[in-house]
Structures are given as C-alpha cells and as structure tokens.
Image (tube, rainbow, N blue to C red):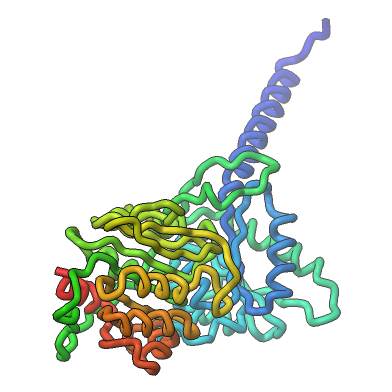
Length: 401
C-alpha cells in the first residue's frame, strides 16, 4: 500500500471537491436548461421554419420552441406560452400593434424576458437596443451559409437563459431525450397591460324582439386579439347566464390552455369543447383548435359536435360554421357577438342569426386589435349595435336577463 503525504492527501481532497462542485453545477445547468421556452416571431415562413428546426435540434432536450408569423398572433400565443426567451425578426419590431411599436410593447408586456433580435443590417444593433432588445445578431443574406448564425443564436440564447430572471419558474419536468409535448405547458399569467375603462355608449342597448323567447344561448366569434378581448369579457361575467359557445381562431393545444387559464380566472366554468357536450347554464365552451364546432338540439338541450373539416375562410375552427348552426337551431333565442379579428369569418353567419331574430353585437373599431371581422359584419347589416369592448359584458346582462 502506498503511503501518501499529507500534501498529496490534501490535493486529492481538493480535486475531488472541485470535481463534485463542477458535477453539481453541470447538473443544475442541465435541469435549468430543460425549462427553456423559446418563442420565435418571423413573418418569413421559410426562414421561420428553418429557425425553429435548428433551435429544436441544437437546444438541450426538453426545450420548448413555439412560433408565430405576425405580431398580433404572437401576442395571443405568448399570453399562454410564458416564454423564457423571445427571438424576433427585427423588421417586425417597428410595426404598430395597439398603437405601439411591437418591440417596445413586448418589452413592456414581458419585462423580465430577454428578447434576441436579428436582421440583415449591421447597423440594426443600435436601433434594436434603443427599442429594448437585449441582443441583436446579423442575419445571413440570401445564399450565404447560415450555420454560423444558428450557432451564434443558440450560444446567445443559452447565455441569456443562464441568467435567471425573478419571474422565471421551473416547469413540469420533461425528461431527457424527449420532444416536449404542448399538453404539459403549465397555465401561466404573464404581465399584461390593463385595458382602459371605456364609457358606456349613449345609444340604447339592443333588446330581443317582443315575440322572441328568452335568450338561452350566447355565441361569440373572435380571431386576432381575441384571447385578450374574450378574457376582458368572460372574466366580468357572473351567473346566472345561458351557456356560452365560442370560436376563437387558435391552434390545437392553445385552445385547451386558453380554456384552462380562463377557467382559473372566471366565476363561470370554462372548458375546451368536446363532441357530445351538453351546453349548460353558467358554462363556457371554447372550440378546440383544428375542429369546427356546431350545435344541435335534443329536446330542450343544445349538444355540441366538434370535428375536423375543410377550412372556411382559410380557418378551422370557423366562426361562420358555428353561427350558421346556431341560427338554424336556436333562432331568436341566441345572442350573437363578433369580436376583433382579421378577415370576414363570422359576418355571414351573424347576418343569418340576425335574420332569424337574434340580437347581435359587434366590437367597435376603437377597441379592436384588428377591425376586420366586426367591420365586415357591420357593413353587411349583421350587427345591430357596435359597442366598446368593456361595454359588452353589461350589454349581455341587459339582453339575457
């Protein structure tokens, strides 16, 4: 047996201790990195797809990567995704959203989240920092190799992530070497800019026609900016109320997350709709992403049916599909409401509801994130009254009670 001097023993202990510290630091870092939640925003679908693929491949296993092409859509998704880092095409940073530049709005809405921007101009770094970005990277021009850019982005992202912010919380353990399914995303509440109060309109609230029966169903449609608008309405409603059915243009899984978030904030019961659901009073049913939602009647009860189908107005679920069946099945006993959104989905269906005797409401231009769907409905005569967003809950009470 060898005899070690006290100096040798001390060196061995120091080396062992240092190795244990390093091992623990690496383990902690790996566990911390499993909570990476990266949100990519780029309006170039081709580059966005490449970026998402590279990040998914190069980031630690268990990382979550989500994406959006347009600022308004990004805000809807970010409100549920709870990102730890945002990656943004700087060209989108100056676009106006809610009368504010998009990048400063992101900084204000998610003040503790690093925002890594990129662009084709070397000179973009100064402007990006002025608008609030934490980093700016030079994007390769068309035809140039992109490997160095992706590696630089990943290094920057990991460096930013290794400095945890006060708002960062560890999420459900995902496990190694596994794709992270959206179904485990925790429900979260990011910092949100409060909506300004809106005075009640001077015009009288519409009332159901004298020969109509009592309102026993409320149907709502929304798209871009709709998650915030729906939150503003649903959280202000209290029982007793008829059942509420909603189509919000939203991807699969996000609809469930949105339903869970609303349910945690509301006095009504909110759930993602499923085929066979019986519409109950004081309950809210949100159409699942990628499935059209329709209603049928069984005796005095309304039954929901949710199933995939061809896109209508390029979307599924479609507001028109829901409103059309509501008009046929509920007639004048339903209240129809169309909220903020791009395009004209819901306009024809709301018109059919009005023609069947339903009272109808459209969100006004001043409070809409995008005054598209409500405008289309108003222009064809489908909307009986346009109201500011925060006047709609009171209007619902006056119409249905």
